[in-house]
Structure formats: C-alpha cells, structure tokens
Length: 171
Figure 1 (cartoon, rainbow, N blue to C red):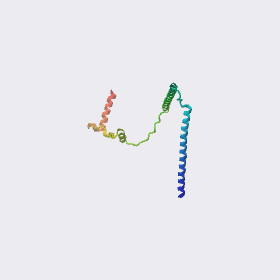
Figure 2 (figure 1 turned 180 degrees about the vertical axis):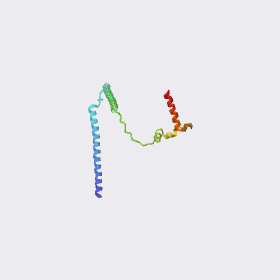
Figure 3 (figure 1 turned 60 degrees about the vertical axis):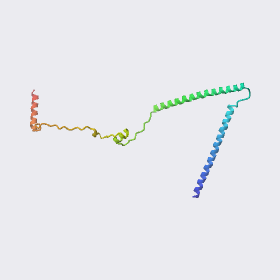
Figure 4 (figure 1 turned 45 degrees about the vertical axis):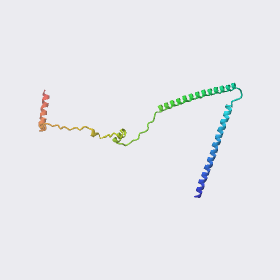
C-alpha cells in the first residue's frame, strides 16, 4: 500500500512540474509577442519628429491624416470583399441543401389508441370518444307484414305462376 501512495504522490509532483513548465512557456510567449509588436511599430511607424515650427507640425498632421484615410479606405474595401464572400458562401450552402435535399428522419412506430392520439392532438380540454357506434343514429327495423294468403299452400302459388306464364306465351 505504501508503494501506491508513493506513485500517486510522484504523479502529483510530476503533474505540478509539467504545469510549471507550461506556465513558464506561456509567459515567454507573451513576452515575445509584446517584443514583436514593439519591433513592428518601430519599423513601420517611426516616432514623429516634433522639432520645428508650427508649419512643419501641420505638415506632419496632414500626412498622418492622409495615411489614416488611406488605411480606412483599404479596411472598408476589405470588409466589403469579406461580406461579399460570406454572402456567396451562404448562397452556395443553400444551393447544396436544395440539391441534396433535407433528409427526413425515420418515423418510429408508436402504439397508441385512437382516443389517446386525439387527446394528444387536441389537448386534454377536448374529450373525444372513438366509439363510433355510439354516434350512430338508432333506426327501428320495420317488420314487413305479408298477407297470410301468400303464406298458404305453396303448390297453389306455383300453379298461379304457371298460369301467368301461359298468358305471356300465348299472347
């Protein structure tokens, strides 16, 4: 058990050393970026010469304003190009979606009674009965009363019909 504690404390020590090294690297990187910014500014933007009379200073101000205007125009042009490219990318994305089509997810089978489905669709306020027979109109069956003579002897009935047949044949 003592070996296990030693390894965990050793791991903890190694982890803290790694974190210290990483923190030192981050600090060095920050210092390097600050130095790089200072070098760039010294090279591209020399300190203005403040010696001279008012006319010379006015000339320096005019040059600075001209440079600022030029940089603003370039920035505006670049922003316009970026916006145009972004719009074109959006249009192409829309075309891709139109060409590929939207995939519809597969529907899952759900076992639900018709009452439960209508209740889910219409909400709990509406109570719907799917007992269709309850909504049907009640119709009374009418019994057809046949004359009792017709129910009589069936042989006599057949003879009457044979007579009718003869009537049609003779005419």
